[in-house]
Length: 319
Image 1 (cartoon, rainbow, N blue to C red):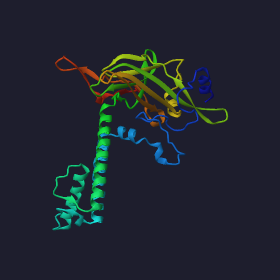
Image 2 (image 1 turned 90 degrees about the horizontal axis):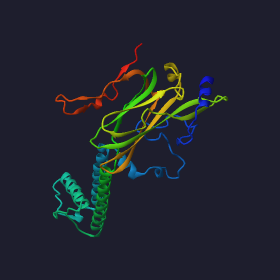
Image 3 (image 1 turned 30 degrees about the horizontal axis):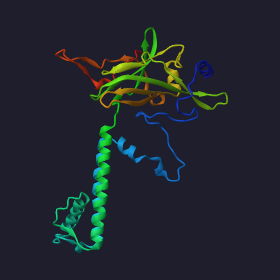
Image 4 (image 1 turned 90 degrees about the vertical axis):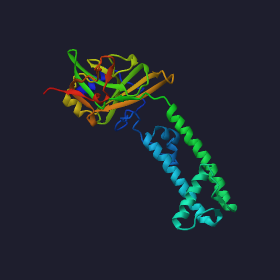
């Protein structure tokens, strides 16, 4: 371990990584979000931005949230009408309890959406007051849902797919660390820039663990257009913190590499950012020969076919 510490002393560590050297665990999750748990607030819900949470939800979860909220709201107001008494609603089919519930529920949904077909109407002060309040909440809820839909559609995103692993491969007589990314939608990204940082757990003379952060130089920092896949290459030489680290040493050390890609989206005329990380303790840094090619000419030789299913495909290291 002393040999590693001596090499670190010759390299310039970063102080602007945004993370503490005393932090534990993974710094950046695979999806690019910081691996941080916030506590100490008097109201635990204050740590959540519900607007950002709903914007970041996967599409199926977002739709499920809206549909569930709509159904639960109508079930709640239908129960309120039942408590008040269905005699305060005209036009109810009272032949069976099921028909009663169906009519009350659909009256609630018609009031919530402000449709109001007219067959069922409230009679009396309490029923009219609840119907008025429900209509107000319905207008407010649909306004919020519309804003969330617009925010999800209009928010610029990079839409990049990263390889789930980083490879250490032979490269020009030495070795290099590589990972790759590719756009998976038809948005056009230009002036893409990569910032690569690594965190390595070091041990002090007192035996305490402390993380050190280093900037990893890349063969290409920027590319003009991100149309196909981009393989990011960090050459492992004497200026790299990985110099002289073999496969056994990599498996023993706690190393995390986090990447930040910044590019310009021509459709939204805005800058987009996406992050990811690779952690040795999660076996996401692998020794291999090289990545397999992801793209090839089409059969008619008129276009290029990019196979995103091959983004993790690589040739294993020869034993």
